Image (cartoon, rainbow, N blue to C red; front, top):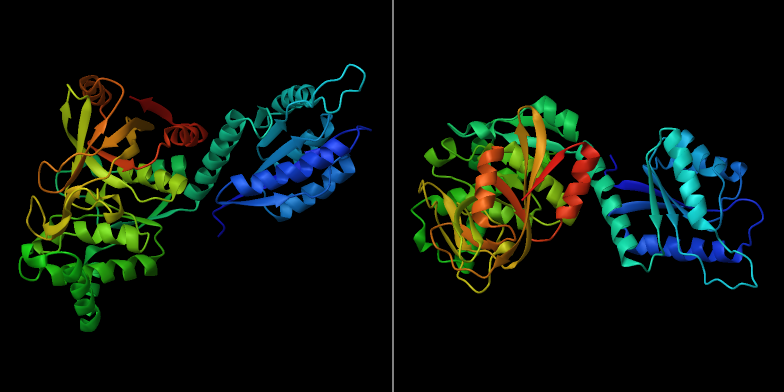
Length: 449
């Protein structure tokens, strides 16, 4: 199925308005949309829509293309009939884009009158119960360009969510009640469906990986890292699990997965932290540790917005003087997130000592930290913006210090007050506004700190 957003583009006018400016806008705005709207399918109408008859032709074209949203650029003044006819027939959101008026001259006529048309059309669409957005400003206005990009990104993400299959490799670790989830509520809220695969399937597959593939991967890791830190047999288990998870996830068609990474995996000396790290970079397989589906929801949204891997993490400490928060986890952060200024090693699991994990500090840069939280049967988004700073590793595992704006003690107290669970998803990009836009489309309250 096509998970990308299908965006329809038209340029309109009514009556006998001059066509030179509308034709120019048709070409220039169509080109701009093609260059600036990422990861979507743009369905362009290459002729001006100037009558109900032409609108009918566009409706047929857009229906065939299964358009999800329509961007209507005003070539010149347009009556209510065209946008309302399209919205009635397609029942999709309409974006009415009114570029700025050309320079006025007291001795020449009005060339577009787009602002008047946009206010008129939006009021009529709203009366008819249609979802409508109005953009007032030309494509060169960064405020308008940014607003449109964020809006289209949000719709694109919500469409992808409705086509997402989340695989559950096992359930949740012992005594981790916050990793429990409400499958029906998630499907109603996000559109994500789930299926499960028993961990025994993974363990059995590990034993079926050919010896030559296992040895080649062990040699590869041994050339990159000092594997002498690992107990006997751990590296072999690492390589077997690396291939087994790839095969099982691909066969099941999972887009994302969660995994019950302990205690069973640890008992078999195959805790998967380092494997998860590699798979995020090597295969684009984002696996959420400790079976925490709700933290995984944030990672999925972040990945759909950025295309980047995320880091499931605990917040373990604060520094009130520096106003920083320390984020840490066992060793599953993707290697692409490691700070090149600090050593990265492959080691035994830092707590259980029953598998492989990477130890290192994570790279500096702007970050967005989030978690979708089921609080009393309703989803809310916990959201935090920050700046990861160049900071040394202070304990075994992977970690980074993040500088934030609000006082860190206030944030911690509010996390406790709001009953936000302990796992968060962190991505190295400032996408808080995009996550808010997605949450608004899903009807989810945002708790930003």
